[in-house]
Structure formats: C-alpha cells, structure tokens
View 1 (cartoon, rainbow, N blue to C red):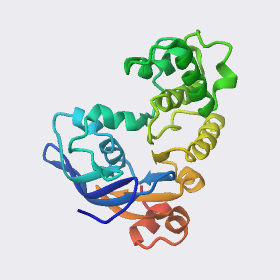
View 2: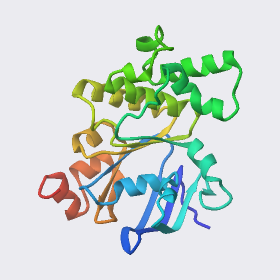
View 3: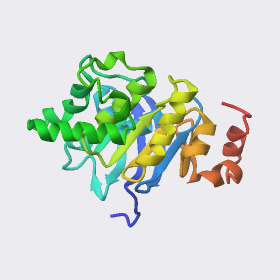
View 4: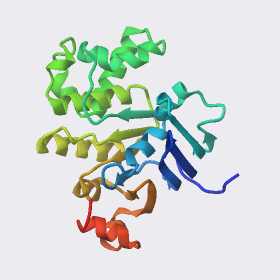
Length: 253
C-alpha cells in the first residue's frame, strides 16, 4: 500500500486503445480543493487521463488499463461501482450539452434519478446549484423555460450547476471554454476560482494562458507521458524539463 497522499493518487497508470498505448506509467498525486490544469499538444493523452479518473473510458470497448487510481484511499476499480464514482467525480464537457428540457429540470434531473422527490428539497437544491454556478440571477425568472434558449456560456454554467446538484467531490472539465467567447470564458474562469473552495477541479485546456491564470498546479503531457507536474508558477517560469520549456515557449505543439 502506498504512503502517497492526495484526493486522487495515480500509480503506474498505463492505458491502451487496442494496440495503441495512449498513457505510459503515469504517477500523480492530485491534492484536494485545488485547480489542476492538464496541458499538452493534441493527442498527448490529457483528455484520456481525465476520463480515466471517473472511468468514462470503461465505455470504450477497445480500451483497457492497468495500474492503480485511488480517491481518498479507495481503489476506483475495487469495490467501487462506476455509477457511485461518477456521482463523486462529476464531468463537464467541451461542448455545453443541456438536456432538451427546462432549466429547472436540467438541474433536478440527477437528484430525481437518485430518488429525491420532495418538491421543496428539489427547489432548494436547484437554487443552491444555480447560485454556485453563478447563474441564478440570470435565470431565476425563467426556470420553466427550455435550457436550449440559453447562450453558450449560460448553457455551460448550467451544465456545471447540473454537476454540482449531484454533490460531487471532484469536478472534471474537458476544455470547458473552448467553444465560448472571451466574456463567457472569463465568467467560467471566475466561477472555477470560486468553486475550488468546495471542490477539487481538474481541467484539460489547450489555452496555456488559461492554465497559467487559474490553476494551482499544472501537468504537462507529451506522447502519453507525464513529463512534468508541479506548481503552476514553477512550470511556466522555471520548468525542470527541457520538453516543458520548449512547449511553454511555443517551440512545438
């Protein structure tokens, strides 16, 4: 048993899609209630790594992996059910994906599926989740209107509210602002800063300036390997590995 500590502890993680090895010997201790940014060129394995933290890769037939990942010391492949894991580790995707239903029902959907039927409790949970997602003031007078009528940035914050409603411990974000304009992006970044008071946030981003702005620690992936992981200021200003320096300074990628 390892003595390493973290919200997540990743040990000797290898992952294959068929014969192609997408992740190679990844070791990482992810602390609680910080923002962790995963950077690297396209195809380097950062989104694959993110999806493995809540076993989304289990849904891909040709995917297999070995090694060990624990959350608060519990092996995510041991006794833990994948549905339980995905409740504890929520995910926000690159493109906003609200359900074709009302704003209220989008946020209430998960808790309802888990058996929460009391209308007063549901209403309270929906309001709390929308407030935490910095969306309540914009939508409180149209909760029964379709979520599809919201702007792209509002839809993404709604998806964050939908994740929060499940009361996760960790929120994974796979390029959550890449489809948004700069104003909406700024709102999401400000929201992440607020959310890290209550959640561990792990974000995959192509925008290095975004990683530099909002993250506490940064992981640099290249060709399936974790090249360097450390404090964001150190990674961007005093990288230990030449490959990191080359990527940060735009020499490739």
